[in-house]
Length: 211
Image 1 (cartoon, rainbow, N blue to C red):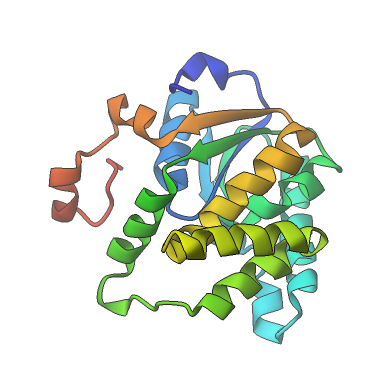
Image 2: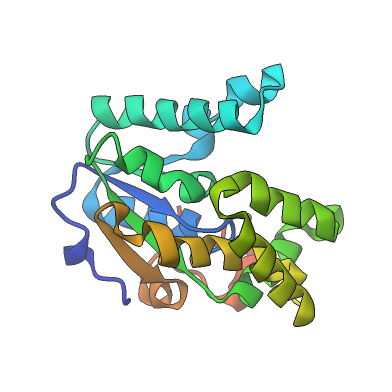
């Protein structure tokens, strides 16, 4: 779907989510700018910091992240929150509050993978196939058969690097799309926004959007 400010107006808060590197940071910045809302990224409200520090299990870490965001949504209005880490758990949030519009960023999964490689640069750490599969299984324990099937499809295509974003989109489409009020926003549609910086100019700035 193309970006249009009018589709975003009138909501208490906006959560911008999707796989990592799908454009959530830029979209959240742009939406906050257009709506005159406050921009927040995950680091600002420390999603899961306590869990990482104390070595909690993933289930406990997810509970901390979800509860932190829920408390925030119930206390504040006119916030645009960038939260890709919570994309697999958006249904847990919507089960307890409707004080948000979810904006789901949609981007080609091959482009997401290539963007992740560029973003990491010399620090790129290639995860093993078993690590990627485990990441999928721990995020969707109730759908293990689907996780395995999609992983095998990616492996057969030589596209294991696309597995996680493909999994996130697949689970959203199959199971969670109707859990809340949402808008799907194409990554490419943001290129007409005045804050956008072209691909050729991005190496000249530490952020690929205008601040």
